[in-house]
Image 1 (cartoon, helix red, strand yellow):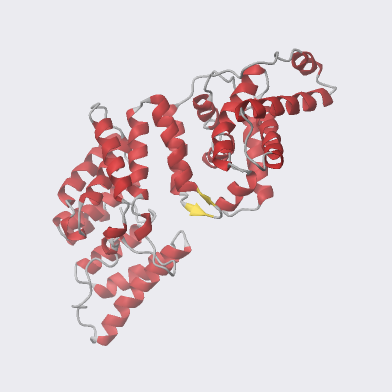
Image 2 (tube, helix red, strand yellow):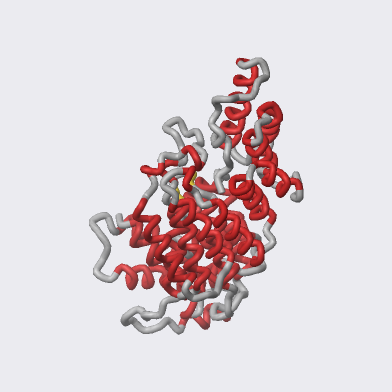
Length: 399
């Protein structure tokens, strides 16, 4: 069974049904039923025209469901005018589906789930596993989302910025279950960037590629996190880095800077350093300044404070951090790292322990706990003296 082929065909088939008169929710349900038939009926490979086969089966499923709904006579009248047999329309409706799935009336979580289902072609079970929630919970979330957008006109203009934000959320979910959401987000963003030629879509694609390139070095065999400064850069995917830099340079040449392009430029500077000591922190701070002109994002301000600590010294970083809300995610971890670099291991150990309690996931919690234990052990072993042999990079947050 060629699952990638089926997944690629899903948005196009949904689009055909919607243009024939099906509402989005019914079209999506019919296509999912057709996919089940494909899994059962294509054991030796797809038919000569797999898209046409799916359209035919899905349309029949839709007609059967519509006819069974006797109380909805207007739908009965519409479905009786079934289009004549012939070649499937060549129109590409994927972009409209992106906009529909990222409708502003949906919550971010619902928009992400609906995008993965309708555009990504994932099953409810796969999405539920990726989000570590029961399949029934995810099914309810997707059903509510479909009901919300069922009255939206298919050709209604969408908001590209919302679509990009949804894809960014998908990417940030990373990997869990049997679906690699980071890879799925890259696949979907490639499609969108190719269809729109938008500089921010290209910027988001570059950002994803550059971050994804580091993935092989991010964890140890036991699953523990490896901070950026300690990663074996020989494990980074140079092919993805080269592609990301090329995509970014093309976008920047248009001279319409956006937040995803600025974030990608920061990631490119990290990727360009052969060793952590060679990182151009001064230029990274400058790019954070550009980013903050575009979006006053508190997380960007936090990351900038850490970068300032690298470029101008830990006390400058702590001063920048002091201007921010201590309730920000990872604020305490950043403070711990900067205090360690400033030669205050006892304060750093206490802050690492506090940060571990608020960590958003188990690997990050374990990493911060190890940082606290390391400094406490050094402090005990040297009777409270400064931990002279510790690497100043061990607790650095990844930017």
